Length: 436
Image (tube, rainbow, N blue to C red; front, side):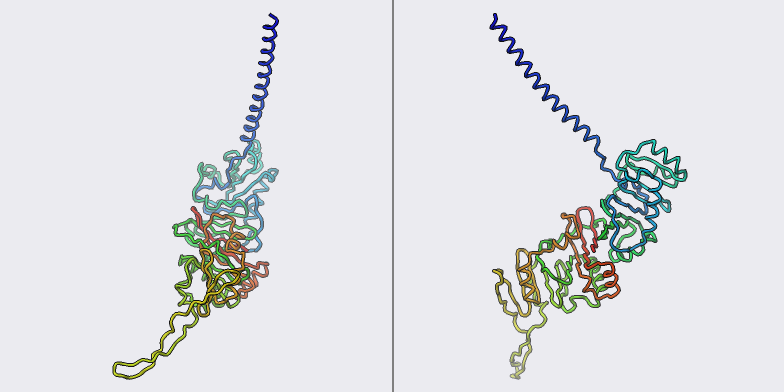
């Protein structure tokens, strides 16, 4: 009997111990779940003020959370800054809760969207209405405050994202949009960008950061993308140009070059139709061409001179004459440097390295390519941050080498030593980015 009672007691104690373990496990799981709910519901929704821009918007100017002054004065920012100060005075004590502000126009009416970091309370809305009788206010999705000077515009904000305004989604600097005609205060900026602007009636999207201007365009057609970004380049050069296969974009680059230089930097080089899908570098009077196609098969057009030889001939009637002929193709001379083979044809030197082909009028430049650890990506990604963008055209130059005195003085006065202009695209858009 005592054995049975002892057994029951032990069994009871064992169950209690297991129950306590289960309770502890249950409490741990419950605690984790509660913390997850608290975290989930405390997350700020991923919405931006620009998400509520109406399709009727003809212009907007957005100050992001990471707005920094651009290095150079390229337009009169007193007008937008006055509008910003006006709004900050209205929202008063909530200034430190602001993430971004958008000033936008529908026709000539001024309107504002403000994104707050915390939910906007109804008491605060009532306070705004009482203190600012000349403005009208509305809250959208708890975090967005709409301010307008016209009461009839209170219901104009969309309940959906306007696709046109997704293009410029930069999270730092200033985002600007206009359609058809730019505001007067932006005319100086447009002078800078005019060679790049097209289809203004579809809208112009620009991002201004402290050291760059980024122009966005809807991608109209999807051509074959260049793949020269990993090509090796020399360490020191005066100018670098990447020409794609678009005639329109090549003309844009040429316009920039002819406005900066009294003569095209490579005027002595008979490139003809070779300004397509190549990288072109200049260093003093020498050049370097980089392509994904073999230069040996098309080198004849690039040679500065071909030897003319005299050949004795006899006419059918027995008359002797001397015929002038172009000498046969030059012999390819091969040599090695640092265990890498390069070649020479006449006064040109070439190199086949990985999947790229290099050609120069200087043997020293070819040797410099072999020694170099730099590639085009080093130029691209000091300016363009998105690594998934395709590079179509590029212009990189040093201010000291510019011939145009007025432009050169202006850039030097603003301490801009280099200019980096990149034409790029991804699946959604194409753009031109100018970095200083």
